[in-house]
Length: 332
Ligand code: P6P
Image 1 (cartoon, rainbow, N blue to C red):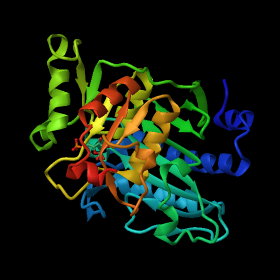
Image 2 (cartoon, helix red, strand yellow):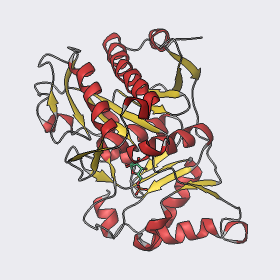
Image 3 (tube, rainbow, N blue to C red):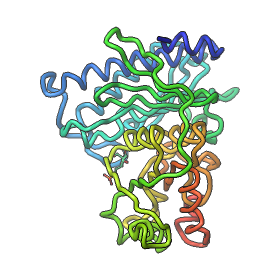
Image 4 (cartoon, rainbow, N blue to C red):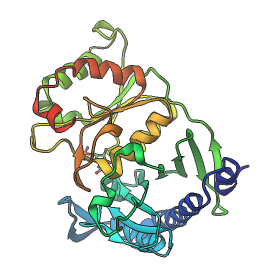
Protein backbone atom coordinates (compact mmCIF):
# COMPACT_ATOMS: atom_id res chain seq x y z
CA UNK A 1 0.00 0.00 0.00
CA UNK A 2 1.75 3.16 -1.23
CA UNK A 3 0.55 6.53 0.05
CA UNK A 4 0.40 9.43 -2.42
CA UNK A 5 3.21 11.21 -0.57
CA UNK A 6 5.37 8.05 -0.63
CA UNK A 7 4.68 7.54 -4.34
CA UNK A 8 5.64 11.11 -5.20
CA UNK A 9 8.84 10.83 -3.13
CA UNK A 10 9.70 7.44 -4.63
CA UNK A 11 9.29 8.90 -8.13
CA UNK A 12 11.46 11.90 -7.27
CA UNK A 13 8.70 14.49 -7.75
CA UNK A 14 10.21 17.91 -7.02
CA UNK A 15 9.58 18.62 -3.31
CA UNK A 16 7.61 21.87 -3.64
CA UNK A 17 5.38 20.38 -6.38
CA UNK A 18 4.70 17.37 -4.15
CA UNK A 19 3.84 19.76 -1.30
CA UNK A 20 1.41 21.68 -3.51
CA UNK A 21 -0.30 18.46 -4.62
CA UNK A 22 -0.66 17.54 -0.95
CA UNK A 23 -2.31 20.91 -0.25
CA UNK A 24 -4.73 20.36 -3.13
CA UNK A 25 -5.63 16.94 -1.70
CA UNK A 26 -6.30 18.44 1.76
CA UNK A 27 -8.88 20.72 0.12
CA UNK A 28 -10.39 17.91 -1.94
CA UNK A 29 -10.76 15.74 1.16
CA UNK A 30 -12.85 18.50 2.73
CA UNK A 31 -14.96 18.71 -0.42
CA UNK A 32 -15.47 14.93 -0.29
CA UNK A 33 -16.64 15.15 3.33
CA UNK A 34 -19.21 17.85 2.48
CA UNK A 35 -20.48 15.85 -0.50
CA UNK A 36 -20.79 12.66 1.58
CA UNK A 37 -23.03 14.57 4.03
CA UNK A 38 -25.13 15.97 1.16
CA UNK A 39 -28.69 16.84 2.21
CA UNK A 40 -27.80 16.25 5.86
CA UNK A 41 -25.32 19.13 5.71
CA UNK A 42 -27.68 21.33 3.70
CA UNK A 43 -25.14 21.60 0.86
CA UNK A 44 -27.42 20.59 -2.02
CA UNK A 45 -29.40 22.94 -4.21
CA UNK A 46 -28.56 26.24 -5.87
CA UNK A 47 -27.63 29.74 -4.75
CA UNK A 48 -29.26 32.88 -6.17
CA UNK A 49 -26.02 33.73 -8.03
CA UNK A 50 -24.73 33.10 -11.52
CA UNK A 51 -21.01 32.72 -12.28
CA UNK A 52 -18.93 34.32 -15.02
CA UNK A 53 -20.08 31.50 -17.31
CA UNK A 54 -23.70 32.65 -16.84
CA UNK A 55 -24.48 29.41 -15.01
CA UNK A 56 -26.46 29.23 -11.75
CA UNK A 57 -24.03 28.44 -8.95
CA UNK A 58 -24.82 25.38 -6.87
CA UNK A 59 -24.16 25.70 -3.11
CA UNK A 60 -21.40 23.09 -3.48
CA UNK A 61 -19.77 25.07 -6.33
CA UNK A 62 -19.26 27.90 -3.84
CA UNK A 63 -18.25 25.64 -0.94
CA UNK A 64 -15.71 23.74 -3.07
CA UNK A 65 -14.34 26.96 -4.57
CA UNK A 66 -13.97 28.55 -1.13
CA UNK A 67 -12.22 25.45 0.29
CA UNK A 68 -9.73 25.29 -2.59
CA UNK A 69 -9.01 29.03 -2.32
CA UNK A 70 -8.53 28.80 1.46
CA UNK A 71 -6.10 25.89 1.37
CA UNK A 72 -4.17 27.13 -1.69
CA UNK A 73 -3.83 30.76 -0.55
CA UNK A 74 -2.58 29.52 2.84
CA UNK A 75 0.34 27.84 1.04
CA UNK A 76 3.19 30.32 0.33
CA UNK A 77 4.14 28.29 -2.74
CA UNK A 78 1.00 29.56 -4.50
CA UNK A 79 1.54 32.80 -6.43
CA UNK A 80 -2.06 32.83 -7.63
CA UNK A 81 -5.08 30.84 -8.68
CA UNK A 82 -7.79 30.93 -11.32
CA UNK A 83 -11.13 29.20 -11.01
CA UNK A 84 -14.22 28.57 -13.11
CA UNK A 85 -16.10 30.30 -10.28
CA UNK A 86 -13.88 33.41 -10.19
CA UNK A 87 -14.24 36.15 -12.81
CA UNK A 88 -10.57 37.10 -12.43
CA UNK A 89 -7.43 35.38 -11.12
CA UNK A 90 -6.78 35.65 -7.36
CA UNK A 91 -3.28 36.70 -6.29
CA UNK A 92 -1.45 34.62 -3.69
CA UNK A 93 2.06 35.00 -2.31
CA UNK A 94 4.05 37.41 -4.55
CA UNK A 95 7.11 35.20 -3.88
CA UNK A 96 5.21 32.02 -4.72
CA UNK A 97 6.28 29.76 -7.59
CA UNK A 98 3.10 28.03 -8.78
CA UNK A 99 -0.17 28.99 -10.43
CA UNK A 100 -3.15 26.69 -9.90
CA UNK A 101 -6.16 26.67 -12.24
CA UNK A 102 -9.20 24.61 -11.31
CA UNK A 103 -12.83 23.75 -11.85
CA UNK A 104 -13.84 23.28 -8.22
CA UNK A 105 -16.82 21.06 -8.96
CA UNK A 106 -17.17 19.91 -12.53
CA UNK A 107 -20.53 18.37 -13.38
CA UNK A 108 -22.26 20.13 -10.50
CA UNK A 109 -25.61 20.03 -12.32
CA UNK A 110 -25.56 16.42 -11.06
CA UNK A 111 -25.22 17.38 -7.40
CA UNK A 112 -28.93 17.15 -6.54
CA UNK A 113 -29.33 13.75 -8.24
CA UNK A 114 -26.32 12.21 -6.46
CA UNK A 115 -24.33 11.51 -9.65
CA UNK A 116 -20.53 11.77 -9.67
CA UNK A 117 -18.85 15.18 -9.80
CA UNK A 118 -15.20 16.16 -9.50
CA UNK A 119 -12.48 18.74 -8.95
CA UNK A 120 -10.21 19.28 -11.97
CA UNK A 121 -6.83 21.01 -11.50
CA UNK A 122 -3.90 22.23 -13.57
CA UNK A 123 -0.54 23.38 -12.13
CA UNK A 124 1.72 25.87 -13.94
CA UNK A 125 4.94 27.61 -12.98
CA UNK A 126 4.73 31.39 -12.44
CA UNK A 127 6.69 32.90 -15.36
CA UNK A 128 9.80 34.91 -14.44
CA UNK A 129 8.82 38.49 -13.50
CA UNK A 130 5.08 37.78 -13.73
CA UNK A 131 2.42 38.25 -11.06
CA UNK A 132 -0.28 35.83 -9.93
CA UNK A 133 -2.69 38.77 -10.12
CA UNK A 134 -2.31 39.06 -13.90
CA UNK A 135 -4.43 36.91 -16.23
CA UNK A 136 -1.57 36.92 -18.74
CA UNK A 137 0.59 34.82 -16.37
CA UNK A 138 -1.92 31.94 -16.66
CA UNK A 139 -2.27 31.98 -20.45
CA UNK A 140 0.34 29.26 -21.02
CA UNK A 141 0.20 26.52 -23.62
CA UNK A 142 -1.11 23.24 -22.15
CA UNK A 143 2.26 21.54 -22.63
CA UNK A 144 3.67 23.88 -19.97
CA UNK A 145 1.58 22.17 -17.25
CA UNK A 146 3.80 20.75 -14.49
CA UNK A 147 0.96 18.51 -13.26
CA UNK A 148 -2.73 17.92 -13.90
CA UNK A 149 -5.46 15.75 -12.46
CA UNK A 150 -8.87 15.41 -10.94
CA UNK A 151 -10.53 14.01 -7.85
CA UNK A 152 -13.70 12.14 -8.83
CA UNK A 153 -16.25 12.06 -6.00
CA UNK A 154 -18.08 8.82 -6.76
CA UNK A 155 -18.78 5.69 -4.69
CA UNK A 156 -15.15 6.21 -3.78
CA UNK A 157 -13.07 9.35 -4.14
CA UNK A 158 -10.36 8.73 -6.73
CA UNK A 159 -7.45 11.00 -7.65
CA UNK A 160 -6.15 10.68 -11.21
CA UNK A 161 -2.77 12.41 -11.36
CA UNK A 162 0.02 13.04 -13.82
CA UNK A 163 3.25 14.96 -13.27
CA UNK A 164 4.43 14.14 -16.78
CA UNK A 165 5.55 10.58 -15.96
CA UNK A 166 2.35 8.69 -16.79
CA UNK A 167 -1.03 8.54 -15.02
CA UNK A 168 -1.82 6.92 -11.69
CA UNK A 169 -5.02 6.48 -9.66
CA UNK A 170 -5.12 6.96 -5.88
CA UNK A 171 -8.20 6.07 -3.81
CA UNK A 172 -9.16 8.01 -0.67
CA UNK A 173 -9.08 5.61 2.30
CA UNK A 174 -11.16 6.02 5.49
CA UNK A 175 -7.86 7.04 7.14
CA UNK A 176 -7.82 10.19 5.00
CA UNK A 177 -4.87 8.95 2.92
CA UNK A 178 -4.87 8.70 -0.88
CA UNK A 179 -3.55 5.19 -1.64
CA UNK A 180 -2.07 4.10 -4.99
CA UNK A 181 -4.66 1.79 -6.58
CA UNK A 182 -3.71 1.80 -10.27
CA UNK A 183 -0.26 2.50 -11.73
CA UNK A 184 0.64 3.56 -15.28
CA UNK A 185 -2.94 3.83 -16.56
CA UNK A 186 -3.19 3.23 -20.32
CA UNK A 187 -6.16 4.12 -22.55
CA UNK A 188 -6.96 1.15 -24.87
CA UNK A 189 -6.31 2.25 -28.47
CA UNK A 190 -9.67 0.93 -29.71
CA UNK A 191 -13.19 1.19 -28.33
CA UNK A 192 -16.86 0.47 -28.91
CA UNK A 193 -18.12 3.21 -26.58
CA UNK A 194 -18.80 6.86 -27.39
CA UNK A 195 -20.03 9.76 -25.29
CA UNK A 196 -21.74 12.82 -26.76
CA UNK A 197 -24.86 14.86 -25.89
CA UNK A 198 -27.10 13.60 -28.73
CA UNK A 199 -29.71 16.30 -28.06
CA UNK A 200 -27.39 18.75 -29.87
CA UNK A 201 -27.37 16.64 -33.07
CA UNK A 202 -29.13 19.24 -35.25
CA UNK A 203 -26.57 21.92 -34.26
CA UNK A 204 -23.41 19.96 -35.14
CA UNK A 205 -21.24 20.38 -38.22
CA UNK A 206 -22.05 17.91 -41.01
CA UNK A 207 -18.73 16.17 -40.33
CA UNK A 208 -19.76 15.36 -36.75
CA UNK A 209 -23.25 14.27 -37.81
CA UNK A 210 -21.68 11.90 -40.38
CA UNK A 211 -19.13 10.53 -37.88
CA UNK A 212 -21.78 9.85 -35.21
CA UNK A 213 -24.24 8.57 -37.84
CA UNK A 214 -21.69 5.97 -38.93
CA UNK A 215 -21.22 4.84 -35.32
CA UNK A 216 -24.99 4.45 -34.98
CA UNK A 217 -25.17 2.26 -38.12
CA UNK A 218 -23.15 -0.32 -36.18
CA UNK A 219 -22.01 -3.59 -37.75
CA UNK A 220 -24.05 -3.00 -40.93
CA UNK A 221 -22.48 0.42 -41.43
CA UNK A 222 -19.05 1.68 -42.56
CA UNK A 223 -17.47 1.13 -39.12
CA UNK A 224 -18.37 -2.58 -39.18
CA UNK A 225 -19.02 -2.91 -35.45
CA UNK A 226 -21.73 -2.05 -32.92
CA UNK A 227 -21.13 0.82 -30.49
CA UNK A 228 -22.57 1.61 -27.06
CA UNK A 229 -23.29 5.17 -25.87
CA UNK A 230 -22.85 6.86 -22.50
CA UNK A 231 -23.62 10.46 -21.40
CA UNK A 232 -23.20 11.40 -17.72
CA UNK A 233 -23.06 15.21 -18.21
CA UNK A 234 -20.01 15.24 -15.94
CA UNK A 235 -16.74 15.47 -17.90
CA UNK A 236 -14.72 14.23 -14.95
CA UNK A 237 -16.78 11.00 -14.80
CA UNK A 238 -16.61 10.54 -18.58
CA UNK A 239 -12.83 10.99 -18.64
CA UNK A 240 -12.46 8.55 -15.73
CA UNK A 241 -14.39 5.94 -17.73
CA UNK A 242 -12.19 6.59 -20.78
CA UNK A 243 -8.99 6.29 -18.74
CA UNK A 244 -10.31 3.15 -17.05
CA UNK A 245 -11.67 1.20 -20.05
CA UNK A 246 -11.23 3.32 -23.19
CA UNK A 247 -13.82 5.20 -25.25
CA UNK A 248 -14.24 8.51 -27.00
CA UNK A 249 -15.76 11.57 -25.32
CA UNK A 250 -16.64 14.59 -27.43
CA UNK A 251 -18.28 17.96 -26.87
CA UNK A 252 -17.89 19.60 -30.29
CA UNK A 253 -18.53 23.13 -31.57
CA UNK A 254 -22.20 23.66 -32.42
CA UNK A 255 -24.42 26.26 -34.06
CA UNK A 256 -26.30 27.24 -30.87
CA UNK A 257 -23.66 29.91 -30.31
CA UNK A 258 -21.45 29.84 -33.44
CA UNK A 259 -19.03 32.46 -32.07
CA UNK A 260 -18.04 30.09 -29.24
CA UNK A 261 -15.37 27.44 -29.96
CA UNK A 262 -17.31 24.95 -27.79
CA UNK A 263 -18.95 24.51 -24.38
CA UNK A 264 -16.03 23.19 -22.31
CA UNK A 265 -13.33 25.48 -20.93
CA UNK A 266 -9.75 25.16 -22.13
CA UNK A 267 -7.73 26.12 -19.04
CA UNK A 268 -9.49 24.04 -16.37
CA UNK A 269 -11.19 21.28 -18.36
CA UNK A 270 -9.52 20.87 -21.76
CA UNK A 271 -5.86 21.27 -20.84
CA UNK A 272 -5.69 19.19 -17.63
CA UNK A 273 -7.82 16.38 -19.10
CA UNK A 274 -5.76 16.42 -22.30
CA UNK A 275 -2.50 16.07 -20.34
CA UNK A 276 -3.96 13.04 -18.54
CA UNK A 277 -5.24 11.46 -21.77
CA UNK A 278 -1.97 11.99 -23.68
CA UNK A 279 0.09 10.73 -20.73
CA UNK A 280 -2.07 7.59 -20.78
CA UNK A 281 -1.49 7.01 -24.51
CA UNK A 282 -4.72 8.55 -25.81
CA UNK A 283 -5.37 11.55 -28.06
CA UNK A 284 -7.08 14.83 -27.07
CA UNK A 285 -8.11 17.05 -29.98
CA UNK A 286 -10.28 20.07 -30.71
CA UNK A 287 -11.42 17.92 -33.69
CA UNK A 288 -8.76 19.87 -35.64
CA UNK A 289 -5.54 20.18 -33.61
CA UNK A 290 -4.22 18.72 -30.34
CA UNK A 291 -5.77 20.66 -27.47
CA UNK A 292 -2.37 20.94 -25.79
CA UNK A 293 -1.05 22.82 -28.85
CA UNK A 294 -3.60 25.65 -28.51
CA UNK A 295 -2.25 29.05 -27.45
CA UNK A 296 -4.69 30.39 -24.79
CA UNK A 297 -6.06 33.91 -25.22
CA UNK A 298 -8.24 34.28 -22.10
CA UNK A 299 -8.70 32.41 -18.83
CA UNK A 300 -12.31 31.34 -19.44
CA UNK A 301 -12.02 30.61 -23.13
CA UNK A 302 -13.92 27.62 -24.44
CA UNK A 303 -12.81 24.77 -26.66
CA UNK A 304 -14.26 21.93 -28.73
CA UNK A 305 -13.14 18.54 -27.34
CA UNK A 306 -12.75 15.01 -28.73
CA UNK A 307 -10.60 12.76 -26.54
CA UNK A 308 -9.92 9.12 -25.75
CA UNK A 309 -8.82 5.94 -27.53
CA UNK A 310 -6.19 6.89 -30.10
CA UNK A 311 -7.51 4.87 -33.07
CA UNK A 312 -11.07 6.15 -32.54
CA UNK A 313 -10.04 9.80 -32.18
CA UNK A 314 -7.87 9.47 -35.31
CA UNK A 315 -10.92 8.16 -37.19
CA UNK A 316 -12.97 11.15 -35.97
CA UNK A 317 -10.18 13.44 -37.24
CA UNK A 318 -10.40 11.84 -40.70
CA UNK A 319 -14.07 12.95 -40.82
CA UNK A 320 -12.92 16.47 -39.82
CA UNK A 321 -10.23 16.91 -42.48
CA UNK A 322 -11.81 20.10 -43.90
CA UNK A 323 -10.38 22.91 -41.78
CA UNK A 324 -12.04 25.76 -43.69
CA UNK A 325 -15.15 26.12 -41.51
CA UNK A 326 -15.79 28.42 -38.54
CA UNK A 327 -15.42 25.55 -36.03
CA UNK A 328 -11.91 24.81 -37.30
CA UNK A 329 -10.97 28.50 -37.28
CA UNK A 330 -12.11 28.86 -33.66
CA UNK A 331 -10.37 25.65 -32.59
CA UNK A 332 -6.95 25.84 -34.25
P1 P6P B 1 -24.54 19.29 -21.13
C1 P6P B 1 -20.60 20.23 -16.83
O1 P6P B 1 -21.35 21.43 -16.72
C2 P6P B 1 -19.84 20.28 -18.13
O2 P6P B 1 -19.01 21.39 -18.13
C3 P6P B 1 -19.05 18.98 -18.30
O3 P6P B 1 -18.64 18.44 -17.09
C4 P6P B 1 -20.03 18.07 -19.02
O4 P6P B 1 -19.37 17.12 -19.86
C5 P6P B 1 -20.86 19.05 -19.86
O5 P6P B 1 -20.77 20.32 -19.22
C6 P6P B 1 -22.30 18.62 -19.92
O6 P6P B 1 -22.97 19.50 -20.81
O7 P6P B 1 -24.80 20.22 -22.30
O8 P6P B 1 -24.72 17.85 -21.48
O9 P6P B 1 -25.26 19.67 -19.85
